[in-house]
Image 1 (tube, one colour):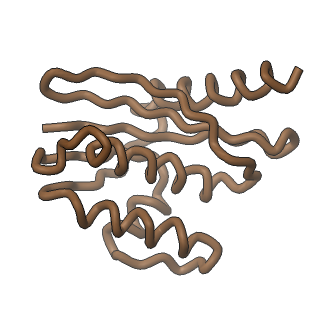
Image 2 (image 1 turned 90 degrees about the vertical axis):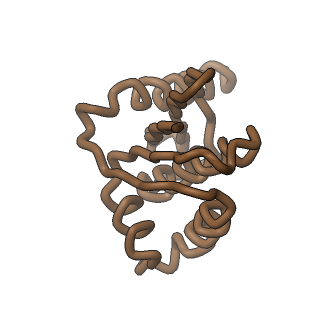
Image 3 (image 1 turned 120 degrees about the vertical axis):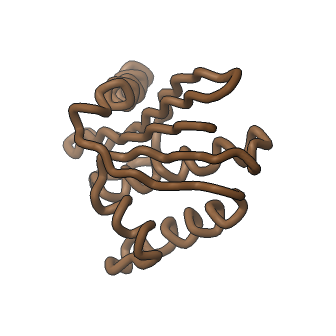
Length: 136
């Protein structure tokens, strides 16, 4: 079984966003800090972070494992559970996420409170810090 935690951080003034992923499973423990393309929209950043989370098992050829995705974004968790995204702004990335999820044999999406997702929050903030440093 894989457990993949995702979170995003956004700095609207600087037009920066970052994602954090923590992947835990048999033979794997990874912490990833990923700069995201410029966005001021926290919901979009959360979807982008989740997109990275969903693509991790695909890229690692771990498609047949039970994968539990953890997110503190209610928008992400509810949209995936309902298989519907109301806001057309997010439709493209949502459709990409759904297409990727369809490649997995078994998965579940769980919403968790922010306080249980601090590790990924720190990794997302590290991605922001890397981008700030690279701008100088």
